[in-house]
Length: 148
Image 1 (cartoon, rainbow, N blue to C red):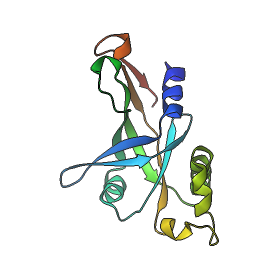
Image 2 (cartoon, one colour):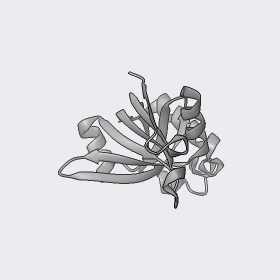
Image 3 (cartoon, rainbow, N blue to C red):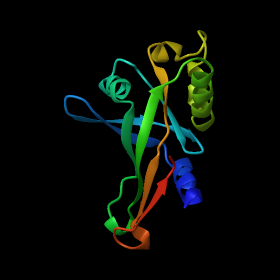
């Protein structure tokens, strides 16, 4: 199951974060991963960023769009998330650049897109629970991986 989940993470690019504050909120972000740790960049002034700082935990989903429910596959994740600083942030950005080469354009003051990320910070999500959904193995098929 661990290998199936890691393969799924490698095959996909976007996850939807779910946070809670004055009400529920969802936001899609591009992610990279190292093992089960997921990284993304986001402006710390966004609603989801504020709510992550306040709660320290999120839920997320990763799934492609399907038009046939028998083919649905996806992940439901939950656990702690935090904004990174210093070396940890650089490591997270390196993971993003490995998966998405265009991130190199954000590097340093000379990067073409460096201004676009000026306010953004690197975030890390360490799921403690991952539910793998795979309707190709039967309607409603689920496996749960507890990590923490």
